[in-house]
Image (cartoon, rainbow, N blue to C red):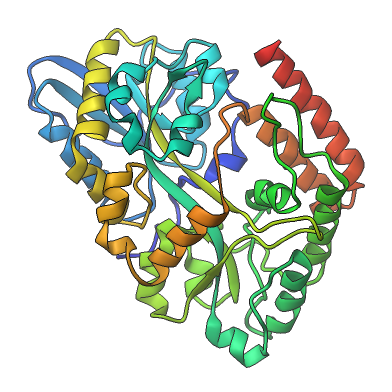
Length: 419
C-alpha cells in the first residue's frame, strides 16, 4: 500500500470547511469523466473528493462501470476545497446527481438531499446504529454511510522506550511526553498544521459535547477552556511539529521520522505499516481534567442523492445498488486501499484485514471511545470553534471568552435551523 499522496485533499478536511450552502459560483471541470456504466438508461454524475490512497479513483470508476441501468460519470475533485466546489456546483445546472459528504442538517432543511429511508429500511438493522442515528432527521434517513474512519494518536514504541515515556492518559501527560520525546531531529508530537482537527476530541475528552441531545451548545465549559489553555502550552513549547510538509491526514510526517506522535486516521495504517513495520502503537485523545474521558472521533463519508436532480429515482437506484446491494464492493472500498471500518455490521465482522494487529486495536478504540457525526453540528458551527483554536491556542486570547463568542454564533445557527 503506497503512502497517501501529498497534494490530494482528503476525507480528513471536515474541520477546514467552507461556509456551507452559501457558497456560490460555478465549478470548473475537475477529475475525469471515465468510469461510465454500460447502461442505456439515464446519465448520472457522482462527485467524490480525491482520496489520498492509491487505487481509490480506479475502484470507484470500476464499480460505476459495472452498473448496467445508467451511465455513471465520476467527477474526482482534486484540491483542498472540496466543500466549496461541491456546494457551488449544487447551486448550478451542472449539479451532481449523487455526492459524498458528511451528514449535516442544513442539507436536509434546505431540501438538498433526498430521503433514502425506503432503500435503507430493509437493511437498517445491519448498519452500525450510531451511523443510522447520525443520518436521521424526524424519523427519515438521509444518506448511506460508506465508511467509518476513527482517528487517534499514532506513536513509535521504540522512541517511547528510549525516552522512558509511558502512553499518555491525560492531556498533561501528552504535553510532558512531547517534551521528553523531542530531540534535535524529531519533534515530540504533531496535531496537524492548524490544530483544528483535535478540537472536537478535546471537547469530548473534557467531558463536554458539541451539542446537547436537544440541540443546545454544550462545549462552553471551564474544563474545555482549560483544555484549550493546555493546548496553548503545547503549541508554544517548541515540542510540537508545526507546518509539516503534508497535513495531519497524511502519515508522511510520522513515517519519515519527523515526529514521535501524530494524530491521524485508521485509513493511513497500511502506509504506516509498510514504512515502519510493527513499531507503531495507537491511543485515543487523552482525558482533559479529572472528569474527562478518552475519546475517538469516528469520521467517515456518506453517499447522498441530490433531491434537486432531474433523475432522483435513478440516482436512488444506483446508490442502492452500489452501497447497499454490492457487499463485495463495499468491503473492497473499506479495506483494500486504506483501512476503514465498514458501517455494515455483517461486512465489518467478516473483514479479515481488521481482525488482527493494529487494525484490530483501532476497531477496539472505535467501539470503546467513539463519537460519531452529529447531524446538527454544521459547517458554520465547526468554523466557530475553529476560531476558538486560532485565537486562543495559536494566538493567546482568553479561551473562556472565545468559547462564549463561539457559543453565541452556534446558538444563532441553531435558532435558524430549529427555531
